[in-house]
Length: 400
Figure 1 (cartoon, rainbow, N blue to C red):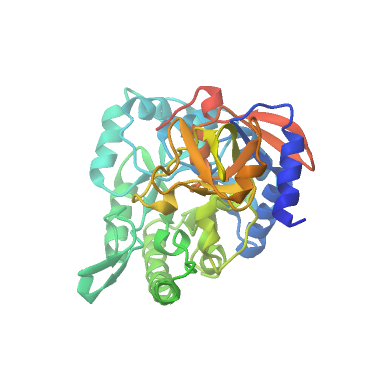
Figure 2: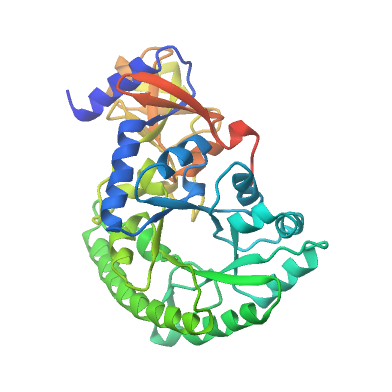
């Protein structure tokens, strides 16, 4: 029996009392992935990206482990909810226009001490001040650095379009504006190198493109390490009390941790290891989060139909954004239909061994987005479900 076949047998036994659709997290795999992140971080603390987990119970589990400290959130409303729930170090990774949320933040000492917001533009500071509604608490601020790799004088750009702050001079100018402004405290810098941390460099059947990606990433790492160090020196000259410099992502943990200027690493997807992380040479994780759909039809030889399953991930549309049939091995989508909103036909010889009501296990493409489809996660240890925990959705929280 292969490892995957053994996993399928375990998951089927563990969830035999549960009707599909159902989502699980294999805790042995989850914990092993956490250990691997810590190993690669080489002593630097890992700030957990909540958008990649979206389950308070599992956030609490990983933060209880050595090597993890703090959360990186994705909306201001989520940040405030997490802070009210007892998380005392929440970095909002994206600028917000949530005026009501800023009024709550500026009016509550506990929230103001726990939450740090992201800015990269003076207009964002103006919005926060206009939203205070009399709140006098100092707002903790982090500046975001644009990490994109620019070639040919900027005519070619590789990387996400995020912050307008690119050079050390630009970031230092913004830092001076924050430091001079009453009601704000500059405490951190964040730089997420998504073109390195979030792009696989070993694409099946595409050796030339894979090599090109590795060469690009190596050059981008060198350029960013030098520029990030310059930025941190420039900002520390303005704000000597800077508390943290955050960088990285699951796919670049060990490279970012090697930079002296970086004090902490961001990661989250590496806990679940969705399918987008199958194409990396920098690490090998274990799939920890899966979902199952039930077989509801057998249209013919070598075909079964499961209920639902059409859960595409965010990002540029493409086949890599779709879930993949995982267990039993050997199933594939019908190219004429793909995964559907209500039903999904699956082709392959394993279909002939599946009965009505059997489970087909899938891996989704991007980590936390699975939790927007399910209200709870069943935690599997061995061949048993040992706990069931609500996702954000299960707690009635839909932040985006």
